[in-house]
Length: 155
Image 1: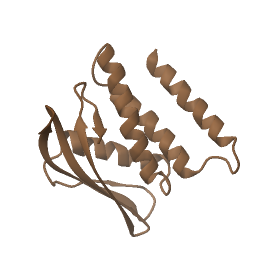
Image 2: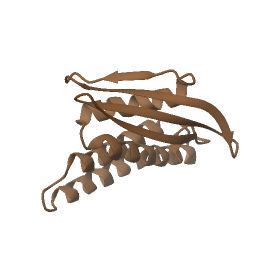
Image 3: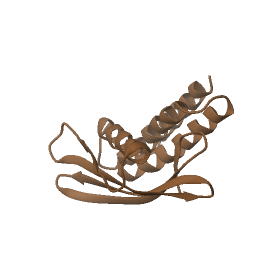
């Protein structure tokens, strides 16, 4: 039920954003789609109160990633990028690239998760996500820690 509430709030925010001057930009929709997608991924982990926390953490990391790359990618490309980043953080070997590629020419990305380390008893990783739009790279670097409920949160 709480997932549906989160989804409803996100849809309402999207509708309100589109009412402003100029409507909603790709970056705005990237933030919203990233947040909703992250919340759905986060909701797959944990149970009870842990599931709510995982959903919230997923919304946080999804919104950050969605905003960063949302300016130039469409909805499908943002989902592919976000999923690849999650898979790299969760399952990837150190410095082993995980790739994604759009059906549109010249749009793809590579995520390289760094080594795992422990910070305040949580598993963390640095990562680098190179997103290519028509051959031009945009590099996103960050650190994320795996929360106790299984979700990754950018720090």
